[in-house]
Length: 163
Picture (cartoon, rainbow, N blue to C red):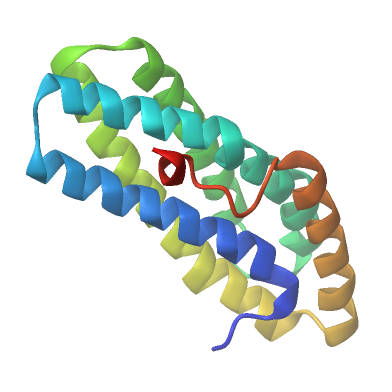
């Protein structure tokens, strides 16, 4: 199913998150050294501060409350919010841990972020598009776009592009 334009700002940010997952995975496979783990951890934490944490805020304050009545699986939104909290804690840990615990946390973060994004895109967004009417989707899209522009410094900036 093609993505409705109302959800495209969030889907674009999801693409950035998936790109981070790929960079983490490939980066660790290419160079598992402590120095590279530290570099990748800092990059992940930087991206989270620039875009991911604000993305979570938009979802929790705009998207989830608006679509909760439409979603059949009553637990889905709660699970997604719990994953947000878990990833927030992982980002704090990545900023402070060193050595092997940091590497394990980085791998776990990349895996959870990937799973989380896939769940939102394949389950949540598909159900929203199937159940929300055209008018409600357009209204929701305006709210999402407004909040994304206010909270996220740039929806096009990727921290590793300037390196």
